[in-house]
Length: 129
Length: 179
Image 1 (cartoon, each protein chain N blue to C red):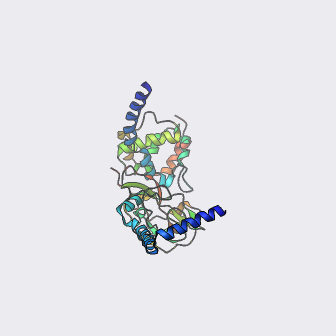
Image 2: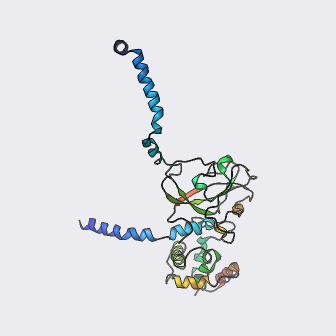
Image 3: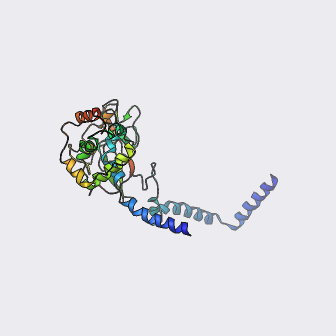
């Protein structure tokens, strides 16, 4: 009986959370066309599976939101922040700490990268922070 | 064997005695006409809605070789269904581009929105049949990943555009544009 009640409570709590999350939908519609559904990219598109190379470097957290694909996505700051938390957890293996907020994402988006590829090389060469 | 013969003979003689030829003809005619009229009934038409397409999406398949087909709501190009392939597969001799543009279309059979991936087929000269240009939900070129005027064959081995598919990725949580 206890188990049944516990399961029912869990299901009631779990359902609305699943219904409200747009991360996977937003990834499919806004990222997966070029980065592909497994994130592997292609000859002309960087692989998201290479994100762990940058994860320990200074500037990576900001860079990931400033890249044109993220900064220019037709998503609100709140939806992009949620998507980035989901995306970093999926491809780096752990959620960003602290998580991205709508304010932080809004600030980063308003400061776009002039040359994303050069910036990526700089971050890769930087020492871990 | 002879027992079976006797049984059949008995049945035949019995029905010949009891049932007139006209009676049999009228009943057989009734079955033929009735069977043909069954799909006109509302019950049969309602059942069609529950048919499932080759990729598991509910609804009538419709005609994938027409621009009006629901999955083609945002297409711009030649339909692979008219070019020796289908709406989910490339014609022989072409390669499906790994990068693609993605949009949503509403399935009239269940009223749900689906995420559609318009993968281009590349490597042979352009097909030239069934040109469609619906562009619903398409974005200007500066939103390149939602634009269909780009040659998406850029990600394939050969960059010659041949035709476009319309693959259902999964159900969408909302139609474009995002809130």
